[in-house]
Image 1: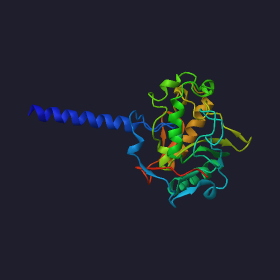
Image 2: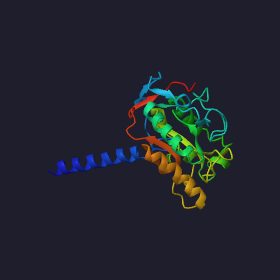
Image 3: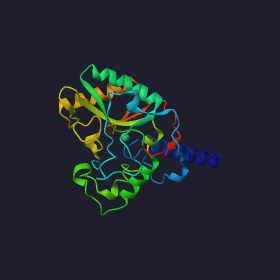
Image 4: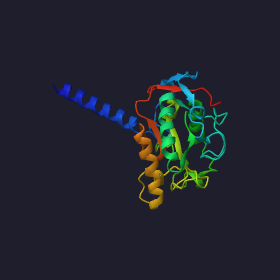
Length: 248
Ligand SMILES: [Zn+2]
């Protein structure tokens, strides 16, 4: 009986651990998966027909992939990004098209900064995080966090929801003055200022964050509360599959 009780408690604590590690979907990472081995991944290296080019379905959407160039937290292009082409699963793109239409009526476009992300790019993040000598983007992207803690605090992990093809990083683009809208931080800033409900925003920045969040959530996306820009389609078609084809 005592053994049974012990086993029950052990099972509960294992379930607890699993749900804690599943709960975090950070942008750079996607799981606070310390010890999450990439060898456990269901990895697919060919693009299936239902992962489509966003620009083809939504011609007016703006796409500027941050990991294709050097304006990102690594300060250089990331492995696997070859062209400025955003890919997502078809239901995610269809939902995004509805968001774009709604926002255009209010004078905004979506600006997509990352969409599908190959697993090799996530590996590149991990390798970068292990090189303590490279801190050239610290002042801009992670001023308050020592680089060696980015991994253990969950900002960098061994797999990302982006590799499943239904997660997108985006912001608002003002069509009246052709400028990126002020959201209070740069996209991919690693710190609490990026939490969607961060209390330090101006009232205008708060309105912008809420407009993006509410419009996305009304069309089936879920925001990650620690990153105002990161959204995953609810009921994503590939919840267990991680893709690794190049962005080209
Ligand atoms: Zn993200």
